Length: 349
Image 1: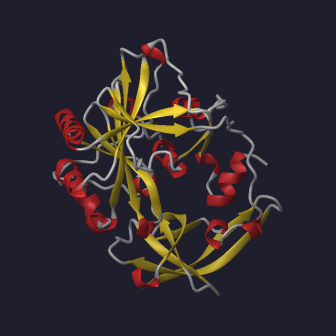
Image 2 (image 1 turned 120 degrees about the vertical axis):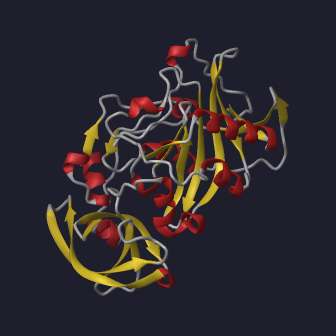
């Protein structure tokens, strides 16, 4: 049983969407995890790459604002994070068929010639609009190599265009489950905001800022908390006519060859079961996101990116993450060459 089986079992993902990287990731401490983490499998078109950046927030390292400022250095408030020695294993255990939720067992559904993938998240009946059809979903048990089928009714979701997401209620069940169309590509930023009703459904959290410090020859991780959502909307989402220019085959054009800084904003869309995904800004002026699990990109301009960063730095406290061991001693892992510094994660569908 391998990782491909796990992905297939949980999400019913087609084999052609599984790409294996040659380099396995193993490390001895959280510092190296942060700096060297690479995904072993990339699921196309599902973009897990952004989640790799923001997903670390789930550990509580980045979303927990210190109650007391420990000290201040180089203009940043120091936030010490204790780390334990750990290892990332390439061994995964595929859940048994009866250990999975019904939306894991039946991870994909078709509607109006579109494929929708399970978010493995329930949605309240209050957010259900109407029945839009019924179908039979197919699931596969990788242990017994058994194919299963299950009937389900399809429903539209309040405030969400059907071409983006729908809900499924399985026969004999009373719950509704979210399924999203990862293949949907908006033409403009305005369309993207409208079809997902993002004004009401999205909330922004911690802003994560990473940059290369030439003097200390290390990557610096800084976080900004409690940034007014209105500021983010006004500075990044105001031009509704921006074209969605993201190309799956030309990811390199979105950042400079020697990337010096990156900005990621944690995003939640509770209605669709999203928590701690990302809106990311690059040094070439692009705003990228993995909402609906695939890359979308809008060119807002280098000046807009710089303006946003400067505003945040001037108006909010920045907390520099310093990793310490169990004895409170700082863990250093400086990189001696700028050529080897951490590169940002860019969607690669």
